[in-house]
Amino acid sequence: MKSRDSVLRGNNSNRESTGSESDLIARMLTGMEGLDARILLGAGDDAAVFKNKQTAVSTDLTIEDIHFRRDWIDLHEVGFRAVMSAISDLAAMAADPFGVLISLALPQKESREILEGLTTGIQEAVRKVGASLIGGDLSSSPGPIVIDVTVLGEIKDLVTRTGISKGDEIWVTGVLGGAAGAVKIWLSGGNPSMDLRNAFTRTPSRVSEARWLVENAGIRTMIDISDGLLRDVNHLADASDVRIVIESNEIPIHPGLDSDIALSLGMSGGEDYELCLVCEKGILNPLVNVFEEKFGVRLTRVGYVEEGSGIEIKGSYTGSSNGILGFDHFLI
Image: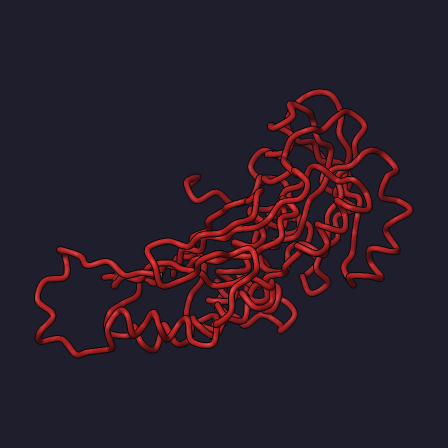
């Protein structure tokens, strides 16, 4: 992890000291000693060096007032969620996390307090997935908190969004809509239940589940559900030029949601970070009970693949998916 000088800073001589950048970085790394065996060189140099052969790399941004609000959740939860959201991309590829890099832009006046709060959550998440914190960057910010998380994972089997054929089945892990339900309540001025709040703040790690599905069911096509089931399934359909039919009555809905909004949030709410996977017909049926007993996580068939393009929805909600394809930062 390094720091960079900026020509935009000007003269710091009259500002209240919150500790040097090196001091702040050292605080984040304190208690994170010891490196994963796949890392040759960690934080302290200009770059980390790792020695495994097949590496998946992904990055994920968390921005204050876009992805979270400080009057909704505390800084520990923000840091934890930022890392786990990035790890979800590795889970979608059944990659085993081993390295995490964190870059932060923090308001200068509160930098020490913010960093200390974020650090406890970041460290919890890094330890939870069995990885090492190996670097990053730190800057002051004139505006919101910005957290950029880069994650490295080792791949044993290549898992992608492609390779879907007519007759394949669509499955998901867990329950959907809870995180979006919490946000909806916050936006209306209320306080969500603890279960819904946890759906937002305690982002799941499905790395072990993904590895099990690859090794025991031969799964080779997955995506994580970050922008809503329909939008992410649409990515799968586009990648293989097929049509995916979603059976809305089968979608596993978070039990804490009000019935009048549950289905729409389960289909398009986003922020669930569960897995959506594709397999040949019948492959997973004999494995569902074993999976659910092992992980304590639901595994549900929600649709199938046919010739054509795009998404079709059947069941309680029928018709086109136009207008409910989930979250996009640049669609208004």
